[in-house]
Image (cartoon, rainbow, N blue to C red; front, side, top):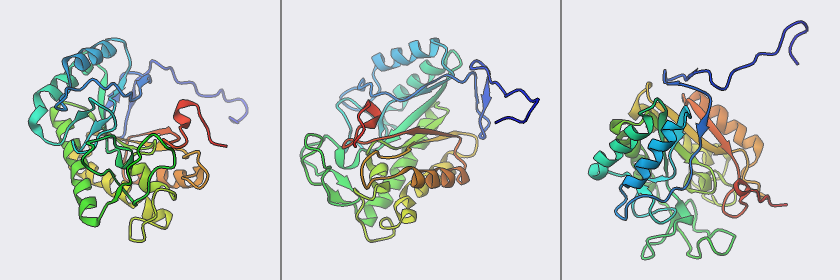
Length: 279
C-alpha cells in the first residue's frame, strides 16, 4: 500500500524505458517470441520473415523479440527455424534486424537449443543433461544422449557466437531462452537433470550452466548491448522447478547484469504456456 496522502505512481504505456545497458525502448509494448517457422531450409531468415518483422515494426511496439533462433543446425525445435551458428547468413540476418527496427522498435534475437525435445535431424540423437526421455509421449520418443563436459563447453561457445553474430548484424541484443523445457530449462529441472557432476544435484549446480552462459554472453557482447533471459516461474510439474528456486535464479541473473527478464512457465510435459496446468 502507498503511504497515506501519496498517490500511487502511474507509468504510461507509451512512455520510453531506458534499460541498464543504455538501450531505450520507445514504449512499454513488447512482442514476445513466437515460433514463426519462416526460415529457409538452409536456416537463413527468409524474405517472408523479414517482411513480417517490417510490418510488426510499423505496428508501434517498442520491443520485438524474435522466435527461436537455433545455435546449432544439428538440433532444432521445429521445421524452418532460423539458425545462426556462423556468418554464412550474415547479410540476411542484418536485413532482418534492419527491417524490424526501421521505425524505431528495438530488435532482440531469442537464441535457443532444444535439447532432448529436438525434432531432428533423425539420424542424430537429441542431447540433454541426462539420458532421460520426456515423460509425455509424442514430443520425442528417442532417448537423449547425456552431454559430456566437452560438449557443454562447446554449447557455451555456441551461445556466445550466436549472440556476437546477432549484435554484429544489427540486433540490439539477445534473449537467452531458459524456459519451456528446452535445454537450459532441462538443466534447471530436478526431473530432467539427474547429473552427479558440477552441473547437477543441488539448485546451485543445476543453475550453473545458465549462469555461466549468461556471464559468457555478457562478456562477449559488452555492457551496451541488451541481454535478456526467458525463465520459467515454475515448470508447473510435480517435482520440477518451483517458484522459490526460480526467484533465486532471477536474483542471480540480476547480479550478472541482465537488462530484461521475461517470466513464463511450463514445458512440453506440463504445457502451462498453452493454458494447460498439471494438477
